[in-house]
Length: 376
Image (cartoon, rainbow, N blue to C red; front, top):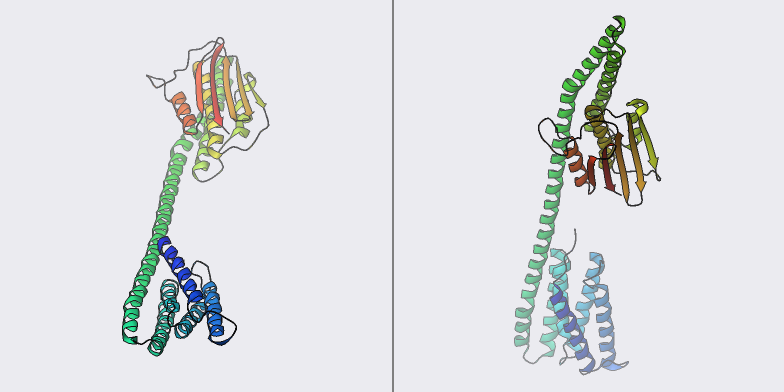
């Protein structure tokens, strides 16, 4: 688990306090030297600095290594208290207590803090004239620091645990939502298969039977051709229904690669042109291109007697553009919902806008044009 650090203000205060202690050691008697008591002060000062570096609270040091560094600081602090009665070396006990309480587990933190405090008490008792006052002041000023830092540590650990629980809860909710969505998609797929696919399959069979009957009874060729077109459309609708069922069950959605087959379903009067360098599209963009082409071509059959339909797909630097334009007599396809108009173009436009694109539809000098643009 992440080990919490003291607040920034407290860390700045601690750094300033350490600097003050070190300055006091350098100017107090006996000063660090290579002989006599000064040698002991120099050794204690070096140990103090080394322990500070090893036990640095901002690092990712292992607990055992940090404990050894804190113990070194504690021992050096006791030695400085004994060697420099007028110095501030005893203040090292604050570093020991604060860092141990904030960065170590409870038992080693208590042990090293108690040992260092006991050593300071012994050193003060041996070197101070009024030892009781110094010892009392040290106890009342050091002990609260330990409990405050333990409280801050426990609060930070509790916060981390709460955040972890919140993340787990959010992940669990997301999994539940996904499971519910998958269950709903499965239900829709089953309903479509049981109702729509079966109905279209029966319709295709009936149309095929009607075509054979018309041929057998020498019906007008226009009637036979109309039945054949209806049969092809019903077969295509069945194929699309199966594709939609597959998409609900997680299969790959239809995209631009199926435009050629879609155009072929309209015979020689529909020609597909692809320009630019083809590139992969997002699943929703792929489906939008295919559904727009499908809906536009269906509208041509329903509303126009066009003898020619152009289907153009252009891969542009900043997006992809699809245009479906017919040339021939017919009634304009309504741009919005109305009596008998359906929601085809409105649905195409909404799908494009949800993907950050746009759709334009309207009459031209020769017929009707639908143009879809989606960003890259």
